[in-house]
Image 1 (tube, rainbow, N blue to C red):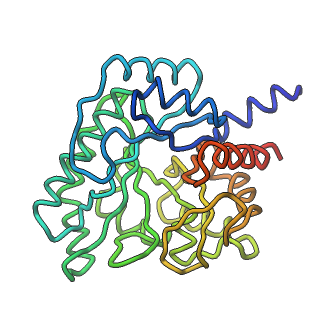
Image 2 (tube, helix red, strand yellow):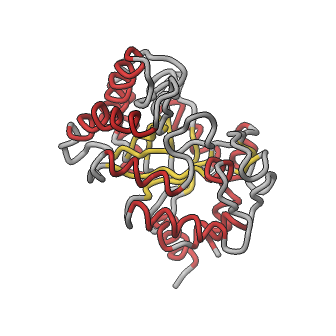
Length: 295
């Protein structure tokens, strides 16, 4: 087999890319940036990540982005705004969360994205997590039922670093969340390596990454892992702090990412980085992950 065939197979198994800026145009700015950092997969915001606005977008940019991603084999993902919390005790927050996530899902379909990443939220107001999960079921389950078209994205839930009254931080926490949503067929997982490390999974120990992925698959079932946010951690395991650093420069270190890519559950799963350092730092992280993939 030629080296080009091997490289093509590796990319198909695990496209490596990053979160790209899109202010000024999804295709014009976002895909140009992706090319400069060597990204084979992209993640974007389609709204202010720290606000509730639901902008319509530019149909011409949407179509160009969708077409170019399809032609170049670039899987795209949308990250929903950070304010979304279906476990909130504040009715206005939950109502806005519904509108905001519905907007992200619809915009994702318009641009041809595979999935929408949303944080799993927290049980605010001192309520028991079972009460918050019941509310997740009531308000989030109907949005999943709206995903009936062939080109609708999956909804990918992302656990947190375990701060506060988080509803989902460790691998086992995905179980109750999936149960609350009846393990809907459009439901998947986005695994953030920094988050699970911060939540207490020691990815640096002997086979620590493998054990974490094994546990996740046992909880949610095979085929549910759809995306990985590949980020190193500035803080020690179990610190409950979400502070990303470049691959190999943090407390996780470089080797566990090789173990991650080699895991059987990673077949066909893209990796995107959310690391600092601008274009230079991100390009270096992407190149580093590609080297692991090449092994």
